[in-house]
Image (tube, rainbow, N blue to C red; front, side, top):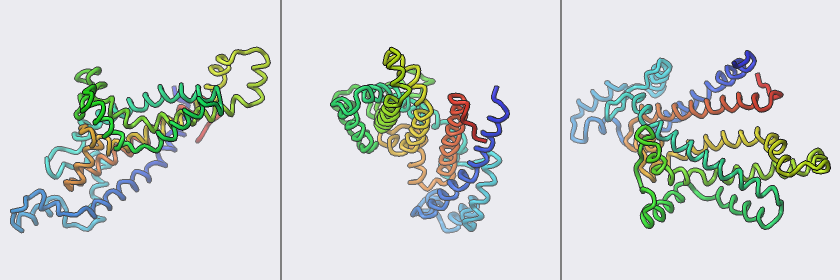
Length: 319
């Protein structure tokens, strides 16, 4: 059961996040006005009459002032109505519920790979600081941070899909249709997303563990005869768990944002790919709803992270 103080902390965090959600949707709504082309012409068709185009503008409120359009959208969104796609007519919420699980699967897969690979690398690097092993791992980590996701994605497709035929080049299978098949399709996109994450986890963990190993209380534990493995598991990882959790939450947020390009490279029917297509087609309601869904996801992850902080270290209390 969550204590009252933690409930107040979460409520406070959520209230603080509301202006961020409004600002994010306002900025996106503003930028969409700069997209070239006329949505009404796109909907009506290039050969449509001027009267038909004007009817489309009035039907969707495209002839109203910018602030009126945004205000109407925001009021409807608060009531759970994100509108319909201007092109397909599908409710935006249905689109989000259909594509967002695919994005979450790839992102979670990438975060898991980042932790599973990055933690052992960070531990190995910290066990021999300033050694050749440490230098090799940190050098590879620096390279991993610098590699663009979309470029790595294209390289992975070229090598592992087109040349060696180990994985599919494009497409996606929903986990509900078979977990093993979904993992197979999501492996290359997850690798493209997790390279930066592996590097971040390894670097952060290595830095924190080296600092802990050099502390006085750890030297005292060594003097008492406690084994390095016991010190690592009972003291080292426990003390860096909060920092590691921070890195993991940031990795999730970064990976979610990077899906905009990675899903396009691998033609995954996810949220990122949907946003790109909607922007190119001028389907503003879909863009607005999808961006809001991603912002809410980031906020929820941050709330869960804040709550986990207080569980890992009860001394942390933010109200």
